[in-house]
Image (cartoon, rainbow, N blue to C red; front, side, top):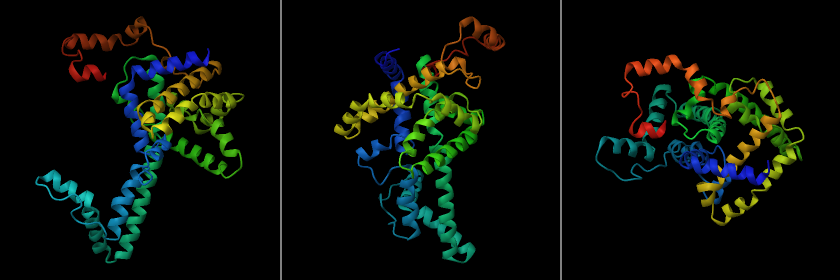
Length: 320
């Protein structure tokens, strides 16, 4: 299949699920998970991630008691008082004063807050930021085949209780790439060696660390340069992102590039047969007959209960 045809499929994928992909990519940008260049283009250097923003504006300043008490003014209402307390730093300051009273030392309380802040930051980075790319890739792969993407797919890793495992695999991958970045060309080389790890986890979240790394390594043998060429073929979009100060990246090019690279994984998976990658219906729709046979008891139970009551209506009909 020609690259031009592949890009047409990617464009069709984005067009079909534009609103969903817009939310996914925007969340990745704001959380510092992916597309970090978009933030730099928007000149948001001091807010590269939600955790960094919170640590800068609330935690650090409240530790030194520099935050004013009425940054956003006062407004009547319970919710307004809560918001004012958190945004002004008084809420964090109160916790700090309470802790210092308990331990009878502001120094010890400060150390506890620093340790707690580090733990929260590490948890956020490992468990949320590192896992979000896997979720995004799963939805982009599903979007290639299915016309609708239910929003509950965002928590599918939690539902199958594999988010911690995926976070662990991603952590090891990040450590390897970080170490390799200290070498001259190792960082770039191993970036492509383990390029497909996120996609492999998206398809099979139960895969072991060893299998995920080795499978990506084997699938990318002889295809690293090809992957680079695919990315380089979209250089025009990067230039447009710069010219538009990141606006085009937010509203189209980020999701388009993701859709194109999802097609790359699909082709590599098709050429590289592996028993570990067995989620067949992630890449093709099951037949109606198969669905009826597989879920005949569920369908019968729903129809017996109330066929009208179980029909999706309104907002639920749109989301499902």
